[in-house]
Amino acid sequence: MTKLIDSYNRSIDYLRISITDRCNLRCTYCMPSDGIPLMNPDNILRYEELLRIIKICASHGITRVRFTGGEPLVRKGVVDFIKNIAGIKGIEDLSLTTNGVLLKDYAMPLKNAGLNRVNVSLDSLKKDRFQKITRADNLEDVLKGLDESEKIGLSPVKVNVVAIRGFNDDEILDFALMTKEKPYHVRFIEYMPFDVEAGWQKEKCITAMEIKDVIEKHEKLMPLDSSKNRTGPARRYKFSNAVGEVGFISPVSDHFCGSCNRLRLTADGKLRTCLFSDDEIDVKKALREGASDKEIENLLFNAVRKKPERHYINDNIFKKCSRTMSLIGG
Ligand code: SAM
Ligand code: SF4
Image (cartoon, rainbow, N blue to C red; front, side, top):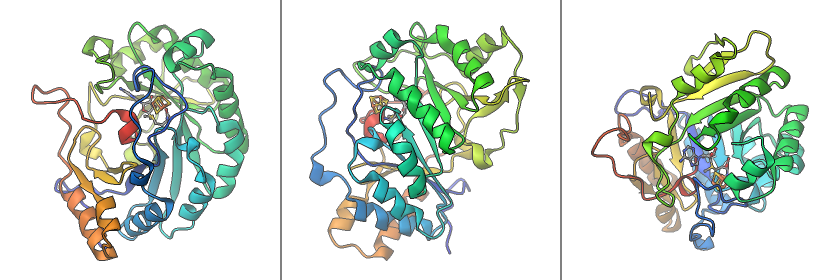
């Protein structure tokens, strides 16, 4: 098997796939209130096309696949699709990033289909603020989804919190304290520059270090092993008597590009070499023009070769991406 090694000697074993651009929420930092213009459904990769791409990736050392969106649970047939992916030789870890609204009912079928774990995005524990951020009234549903996922062992259940200054920074400690009661991995993610209604400003981004300081004013965190292996880019910590853990992901203040192991596939079939790079390789076009597996493989190796050494979001040359997170698959 020829493995996917990029020009900077990083081994690529992780594929993040956006399976839809649709979503049942409208988070203010991700989408305008009336949503984004949706892709033509014909342009969305069909499940059998995704299956073929993932099989080819798995035959070159991709062992971990994450499904995201848009909201992956709004796409019809997602459970059967995941069941098919779980059967692919070489795939060891299947995960899903979701807003959690539909998770309570989906958790068990997903687990039975072979999903290993979930990341649930949740930016406020206050009902009115949740509504303000997401423009919907589903906090209870998300909390039930978290509970159910934990109960049935879709673990570890990770809770992703985007910390935005002046928006939810007064809840940092509440989120961290959740880990004393629940075995969740609460991960604070820095607010990244995607241009939704020109809302991003550097001052709104609270750095991972600042977030940690806020928590440690209350109680010291103990460092855990953050070696990349299974934990991804989070720096991990724990309160001494906690059942869960706290993580910090710092794409803005302290990038982790040197250990990046991922490729992304958009819902409309473009391989993206980096979250922040608009350099895309069109796999869908090739698939639909009858490309052989060998030709698809060549596109895959080409994408890996083109992976940039790092992102440039803190440099003057950086231009905001043409796609927002929901169109890339965050
Ligand atoms: N709908 C699913 C969800 O919300 O989990 C999956 C897709 S969503 C685009 C994936 C993640 O991107 C969410 O955790 C969301 O909070 C995050 N996200 C979106 N825009 C972001 C931004 N500008 N900075 C940081 N995270 C962002
Ligand atoms: Fe939808 Fe996720 Fe974007 Fe919120 S962050 S609007 S849930 S895609």
